[in-house]
Amino acid sequence: MTKLRMFAAALAALSLSTAVVAAGNGLSGVIHFRGKIVEGACSVARDGAVQATFSCLRAGVNHVRAVDLSQDDVTHLPKAIATVQSLPVNKHPELQLLVVSYR
Image 1 (cartoon, helix red, strand yellow):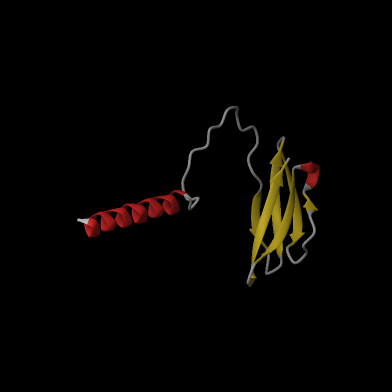
Image 2 (image 1 turned 135 degrees about the vertical axis):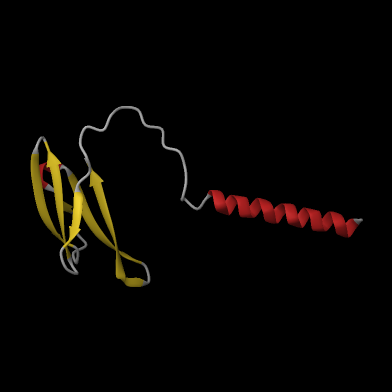
């Protein structure tokens, strides 16, 4: 009977750890939002290996800015709409993380 209890406890612990991992994978969730979206996000188009063009429509005017992705510094989009920064991904020099922070 002791081996059966140990097996049941081990199975329960394994099930619990799998549920925790599945819940923490960041692929699902609920966002509660109050208010309204008054302007859409900027669109991004890749222009070659190291450049992207941001296009942001604000108050009926399209604001366009080219960003050099090979630089680590922060780039400000027109009208202080957002800032853009390209960061390297650890151990993968061919990958970049593009961070857009809206104001």
